Length: 500
Ligand code: SF4
Image 1 (tube, rainbow, N blue to C red):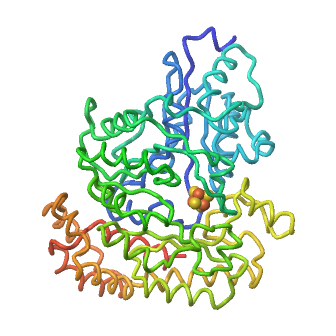
Image 2 (spheres, protein in one colour):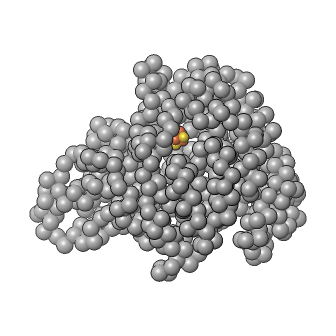
Image 3 (cartoon, protein in one colour):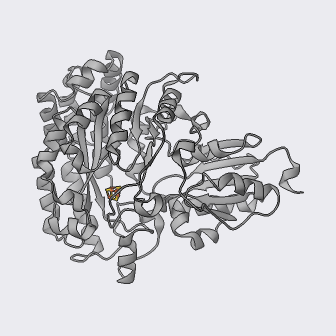
């Protein structure tokens, strides 16, 4: 029977679980789940709810995010569409096997199948290469007509002004700590390790301001039954890539009194007016790829934009606006040696970055870095689950992979020891860093009580350092200068640092 003879298809859209099976991963947000007595995850990735929105209404769609819920293989899906990042590929292929055994058509999409199409085709019936906007409805029609192709690839990049409203209603929204919105795609730079160039290109495309406002209203609950206000993460690769658009957007979102974060390039530190507008519209933190403190590494990376900046000055200029800098670093680039670990530890201490993000260099397929290392025979394996920025999957230039992993763990542990965390927190409390947030969006007394009570339950433990930290912390929880969420984030990093 042709599927078209039915009244629409049942379509399961799946986000596979993050992380390596049997190992702790920071990305599984286990600490948060345990602390909050709930399976909470940072946010739902947008690919799947976007595809849900592109699906013609005659079909029945169910979204499964394995990070917050189990997969219901008993639901009789006609099609399973799976969105795949590189580190999720083994799990995605396993899911395909389950579905294919029961006769369900499987489709893989996302960055990994787009970059490793032939590999993905060995595990599924069809692959969507690149953006789904133009090809997903065609694929479904072909499937109904019994003429499914092996590969669907759009001829041109999607016009984001025509993107449908992201179908957030299908998500288990209470299970996420924050919401995500993407307003633009593309980045004008071309860093060697980054796949944005291959996936989204250098030309900046953006949604209209009205589209973004509509998404904010969806998230905030206007017209829906969802009332809880959460932080919003703008997932654009570089939120200030188009400054005129960014300025207009910041003005437009001001009335919504959001608490938001974004990613941007370091040149934002020079943009006084933009920073003022960002803060006035609710920006609490910006993620910036510092990548390395070594000039030679930045040259290897083609990260020219960073080479013009003094990082400590940049942090101070941005943080002077009440916007926290979350700087991320890569360890293992070709100029790194054994001394680089201590140098980065010293930099983190000196700069007082509250939550530095530390990663092992990972050559993702589709990047120039991957091609260079593969040509040089330096890719050790393609066990994609370990392409998670926590494992050395390549041969470093000046040390062994084991030395790189050990150095990474050392930097992580020193940055997130309870002693280091305590010092940094005190610095931020002393300067009353969250003064503005605590005025405009105060932490409710009820949450402080609950947080303190939950902390006391952790006191009976063999983790004596944590118990000492909690004893020092408890009297401070009720201080109005203290943001509970930042403490939770730091404790999660400590938990991960010392469990690996
Ligand atoms: S600036 Fe960021 S998003 Fe742009 S290419 Fe470099 S790493 Fe990628």
